[in-house]
Length: 380
Image (cartoon, rainbow, N blue to C red; front, side, top):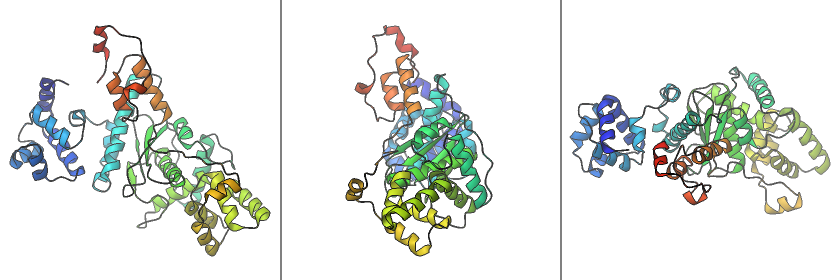
């Protein structure tokens, strides 16, 4: 983007641009003095930029974007309306800035792809919001039907099934201290991001929880402790119940548990086999067995303490999967970016940017040479 264009757009933004700069600064954990020092600007000048009483120059905005690790377009392009309506309900950036910023970036990229690729179309069905534990169970049964599952089978290929329901799943390693997951509804469909630092069972539970937010057309939310009730938040507790019921349907779990317990007569062995079959973590399995009345509190604690070993995998011929292993990008989204690259809608640099630098330009398909005039077709 040329400096003259940046300056022209910035001049038209007024107070809104200053608010965006302040928002990005807060999320980066920087004070006005910190940022001003980094970009070699007087703190009072930065304060005036943020409150809208002073315009920002193109060079200053470029320095600010670099210091805050943001693309310039983030400051000068309005966030899609659907995102604003959700983000304004809370201030998740103050709690989990890494996942907050990333989910917005993902949403922007997905909406860019939708806007330029007629083959990427997302449509998310809406379910009635549950108001009790029983309603959460019934909602999970309805959701499983939407995902093409019967009443007993495991919820495998979770990202693929989520995409079929209009929710694109992504996974990035955000570290042990970041949130488990976040989700956001778009004008069409939705996106969910899972912290890839989690183990596979926890990642799948986090995605199931976020699918609930999207299917119930819930507001933007960041979930810090998926599968744990906290602060008396009944809505989150019902979403947790929904997530467990999606992954561990009553009929399937009861039949499998009773069969394995009768066969092996060993609680640990049964737990290891079921956790593998349904691809859940032991904490989720223990809680689900308890809430369905299949075991008591003592046995639930024993199941929670079980750890699957390498010997278990060999001895019981377990199938190991690694769904949502970071970095993970929803397949329909990757396919869309490659279509945009192949038809010269975006350049190689823009394609790798849309793919969050999980691909290099060498990874992209080889294209026939284009005439020099074709550069004007690219969308930045």
